[in-house]
Amino acid sequence: MDKEALIASLKTIVKPYIQDENAFNNLNENTDFIADLKINSANLVDIILDVEDMYDIEIDNDAMEKMLTVKAAMKIINTKLNEQQ
Image 1 (cartoon, rainbow, N blue to C red):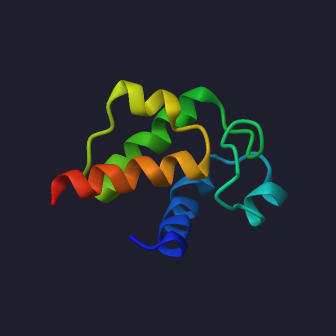
Image 2: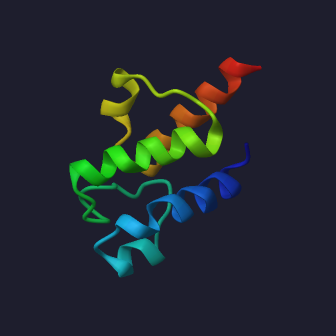
């Protein structure tokens, strides 16, 4: 999946959970979900579940622990999608 499309879909997923609108408007692959968007850990789990649903993938615990930035999320999503092919 191309980078821009993936970032756009992640923005859709994280929007309900953000606490910092300014950081959200500047979201890019270096954005940190917790530090920049002020998303708490419980909501981060919700985001991961939403990602699983949107892409029909399963994210294991090891991958969940690494999914703290947009870049990490994109890498995990692409890896899981490639595994399905």
